[in-house]
Length: 70
Image 1 (cartoon, helix red, strand yellow):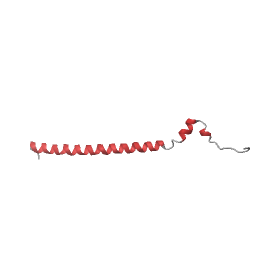
Image 2: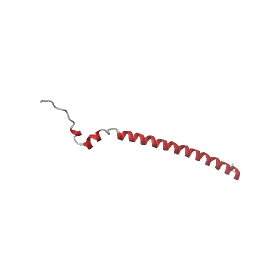
Image 3: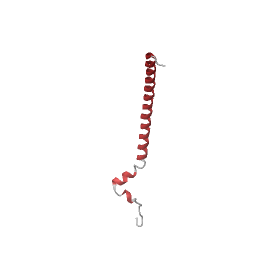
Image 4: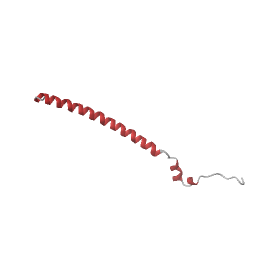
């Protein structure tokens, strides 16, 4: 066909560049997943710390009463 041109994207001439173009937004998704994982780890650590602190506090109070504290 004479005079017919097919538009081409200059950035898709090489295969690695063309496939990299499909990965837009991948960094944002990965960062969001990491943030969610870190939030879950932080929540688990807080629950563990809170339970441990309550147990230590109770044991300390019992020991002070046993020794003859105020």
